[in-house]
Image (cartoon, rainbow, N blue to C red):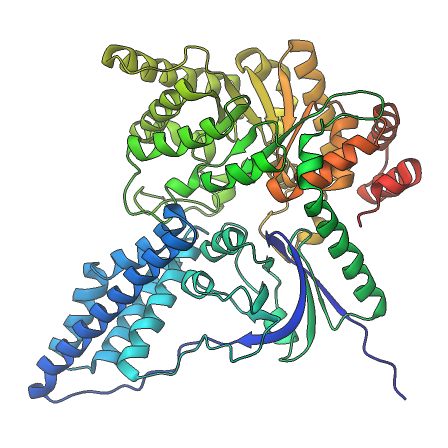
Length: 584
Ligand code: PEP
Ligand code: MG
């Protein structure tokens, strides 16, 4: 008898928390080739009508999808469909297609297909990764309209099966928003990242998902068993007995924590030798605040605000922002809420701003560097945050800072916002703190100088690792080189913690490293006072803190600083901290 094949293990980006095992169902939604069909002159009007009817149908479907998503998940999630709805009125889409029908006598389907190809070609020419979501919307809309014009079968049909792991090259927001979560247990894709629109919806629906798996849709076959770990980003095809056991252990640990939510949430994040750790939550959407509170967060350590701009065709009004910030501040009435100003650029750029094509977007106009060019956008945001400060301990955090001067200029804009609100008689707190994220080696090396200008520092390890090691954080091919435990990263973290201690400013960490046991222990051992993690990781990290001894963690971290490489750090920590370091 031949040996059973070894399980295939793939690593991608953790896109939505949770772990599940199910049966693979591959979803192929490539759009079929549309035949080049020309119609007679007298049929042109009929083709134009067919095209308009298809657009109207698409609009009705999208509006229904939007309102159903609002009822199911909330307004923020529902707005994910806005870009597609707006595309239906975009002259580039509509007039472009009508031109091909009226002037070239192309059949409606061919004219639309052709126009969408042109737009795809044009949009993909900019190297901006933000374009990816736009292209994904374009493909979703194209399929929707062509399905009507060509009477295509529903590509998303999953059949009657349950326990399905949906595997695809990429997914769309409309597919995920309408998923039956009783039947689909997990998602796994070749493309996409944590910020893809469909991934945001998967998180809201609490379906475990891993994106950016590079080839999972060709490796996995229908009917195979697959384990999807949305926390670690690990997927196992055809798990053997060892992997199946590992899955069961991890699943029961996570289940166990969820049964203990209420009890653990009430406990303090304090080590065995009585060191108190500030454990806060990262939020991508305001709706997550209630969950974070329920899971015992000591406030919000990173409130990402890009949901207000990404995928939108217009800048968000001050009022809408104020309501979003205020709702989180009110949820955490007794705790700080660190709101990060829009971190635009890199993989996120709203369509309503002119985004210059850049050879290296991650090294381009990003984070605080966008402030000088978009003063009105940021002034409105600062006003909205200040207004929310009347309802809680709201603090402001600025991304991708490199110099003290950048903090000074944000402070200047903050002063303008304050002056305006004061003149208008709008209430706000005078005590709002302004902090800097440490996300580049320049910031880490200058932490002392930054600490003189900032009220607090927060280490964004995702970017700090990316810029220290020169490894694109969104590249699945380079994922094995993206090492948070690289001693060069650890030394910078130690420097920042030291600078904060000497200057009397709080230093916390809010990247993914803080949500992983080894990373969390190292951060604490290197002197970071607070950790901020996505709400599903709060219980695990709090339990870890409560089981560790700070003296041992400090000794292990100090040894890690002189290790030659990340693998030695890992091994050293396992040897010195034993049990604490083995994830369930
Ligand atoms: C980080 O860079 O670690 C961080 C928390 O910010 P983001 O992941 O949003 O870039
Ligand atoms: Mg960052």
